[in-house]
Amino acid sequence: MVDKEFFDELFRYYQQENLVIVGGNDNEEHRRFTEGRQPHVVPTESSGVFVCRKDGQWWTLMNRFSGAKIRLSLQKDPKPYVKAKSPELVDLKITNYCPFGCDYCYQDSTENGKHGDIKKIDQILMAMDDLEVFEVAIGGGEPTMSPHFAYILKQCKRHSIVPNFTTRNHAWLKDESITELVRESTGRFAYSVDNSMDAYRIYMAVEAAKLLNDHNERRLSFQYVMGSGSQETFKSVVKAACDLHCDLTLLGFKEVGRGKGYQYWDYSKEWLNVLEEMKKDKYIPRIGIDTALANEAKNELYKKKYEPLVCFKEGTFSMYIDAVEMRMGPSSFCDTDEYVPFKDDRDFSTQIEMAFRSFGNAK
Image 1: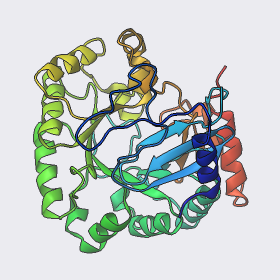
Image 2: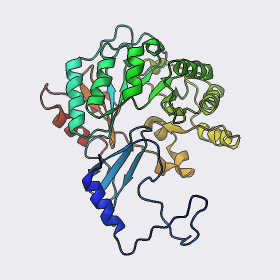
Image 3: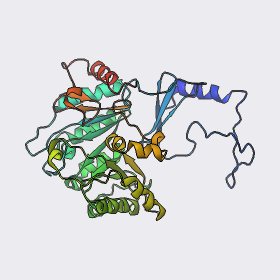
């Protein structure tokens, strides 16, 4: 279904007297107007379905398959867009149970961790629907071991929210009822890896479960905690992601939870240069970083002119909801005093919106 307001605004944009759209044929680029050209304001070639929502003078378009977002304005000289009216993405913790015991886990999840109340999770998902949240990143603990995991995936689909999740668990790959749900409703899932062998083993298991798709295997991605292994281990993970055509998310090391006592490798000043050197040898997958790593390397990112591609502040377009402790924060690793508790079981939409407004306010 086409959003009529977006269509009407785009149509008016095309009707401008001083607008010329240039293009070539299938075999060559148009040679006229080679200077002062701007790229097309909306994607004209892409796999997947785009959905959109409006916030003031700005539109946000999201590809429901890849998760790629485009923020654009069809107005002349719009005000800078520095914060969304409500979160585009919610990082949702559904359990604090995890049997894997990673030494560097900043969530400090254990086998004694409890699961979130499914009735309250249901209310949170309904509120996210009301607030036009595009997607949810389901985490924990180990989310696939929540007894409510399958139900939560179904509810996300019902509310037109794209569910993504992070995991270390292999067992669910042998459960056809879960894998079928993942095929039907999930945007992407990321496996936490400690080394390149983890990545290859996981890829083979996911392939055996027939969860790789026809879109360059973009459903599966990897995430790696920087400093959890040596610089050589980091490089081997990048190479594995490249070989397997999987995206890779690099996470800044967080010295909280069990991570507080972990002796991590510090290559914070070298990793960007390492990636650039590897790129020369064509070892470079599509890479994302979290805000913790972005802030750690802020000076280098500015020097190398990567800052337009990076968000440094949490709580501007996304937020964190801990459905176990029933509290909200700008991120999953924020200071304790930054959390906003849910006051009661009524009107979760307003509570989430008000909490989000208080996060990441640009000066």
